[in-house]
Image (cartoon, rainbow, N blue to C red; front, side, top):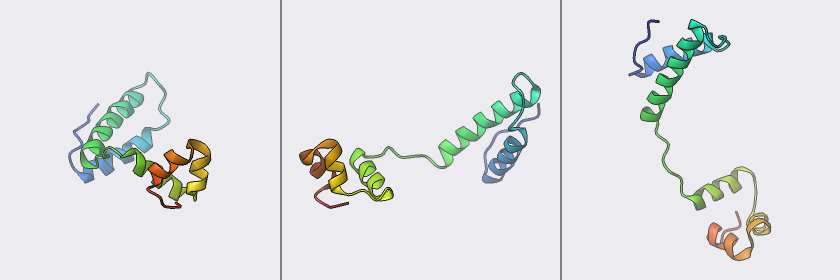
Length: 93
């Protein structure tokens, strides 16, 4: 199994291409083992290259409401008026 570290975007693209080729490998095979190792390397590279910041819970609620076209009224039905107003900072989003 000739696998090298994923250190660059080019390495990342190549690893993703190989993962796609191996995607249906049967467990217990050399291809499956290669898929598992490459997936771990890609996951580590992506976490370092494109880290996901911790999200503020209120910002997460606001983003979900906006994405799904929900309003303060919708949120109020779920969490109650005082919590909805606190979470939305008074906007009708």
